[in-house]
Length: 205
Image (tube, rainbow, N blue to C red; front, side, top):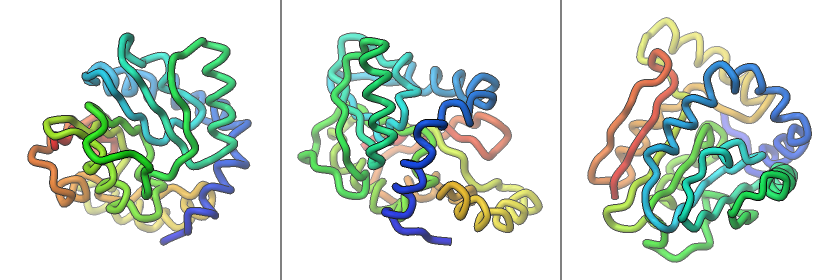
């Protein structure tokens, strides 16, 4: 099921003031440790975070690097700006769509995204943009929920997907690993997180 960028943007705008509260339980039980693991792998002097949302990854940003973070939802970015000032985080925040990045090719040492490509309308387009702006030898690090490799669970996820997309604009049945492998990266490594539906993906350009 596909929904256009404007519709998804409006949904995240509506959710923005309540987003941290809505995910607080899952954040405490699972997401926080996965985010920490993701950011422990970040290297380089210039980092891009795609889909910064409300700034949930601010606590894990490495020191000494220039970090740029983008989101396509103005209201989510507003929450991130408030959190930036409250926590005194050194980050450049910009309103931008991952499907059309305004950066020059080969700009970033590492590009990071967590739970983003479930809601990008054209995920291949977005992933190719990450490949473009990443420096040669640089890495793209993704933390994503994906469709299960088990037939019964995959069938259930496919069945539920239209309802989830309609509710929050996120797809739960995408095969992001295969999508990354098809975007020209020379090496792709997957670290299983929770069963087989949460994956930490490392792709080297």
